[in-house]
Amino acid sequence: LLCLWSMHYFKRLGEVMLVHVYSGEMPLVTTASMVAMYSFVGYALSTVALLGHNHKGANSLVLPFSKLDIADAFGLILWLVGTVGNLTHHIIMSSARRGRGGTKEYVALSKLGGLFGTLTCPHYCFEVMAWFGYALVGRTVLHYTTVTFFSVYLGGRARRTRQWYAERKLL
Image 1 (cartoon, rainbow, N blue to C red):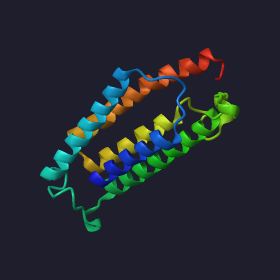
Image 2 (image 1 turned 45 degrees about the vertical axis):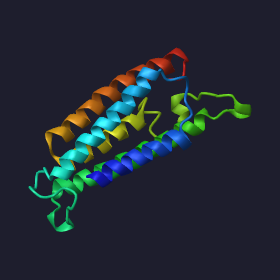
Image 3 (image 1 turned 60 degrees about the vertical axis):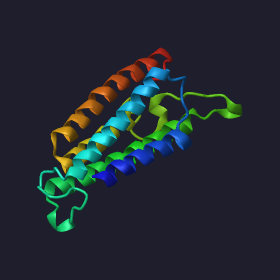
Image 4 (image 1 turned 90 degrees about the vertical axis):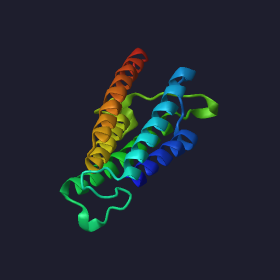
């Protein structure tokens, strides 16, 4: 579990540093809340893992493949598909926002590619999928609370993003 969370976190850091092209400035309060949330989730999930509290009654830092069940396998697949889908759609979105001569040009969602023609924020959908897969592997109240939090948070952001695209006639 720590490995999955760590890979997600480092993927996220790489996206922020190398992939993202932001549409505007982010308020300091939003940035601070995201840092606090990631720090809290990382600390809480690490504590749960280090204490060895998981659905198998074993140390969750060491999970031999012989002890994997169908929910673990399904969770790992969901996590992998969600993580790759999230990264892929961030790259698609980033390439569409890189304009010529240093200016940003925004492209209509239907022309971006990937699942942007179907969903306003497929990268959010894939991120929730990854967290749900993570929760299936962890199977504690904390893991399910984490996926619920991300679902609500990203749902709200998707709504605001849709409004942003609608205001610019990019839907």
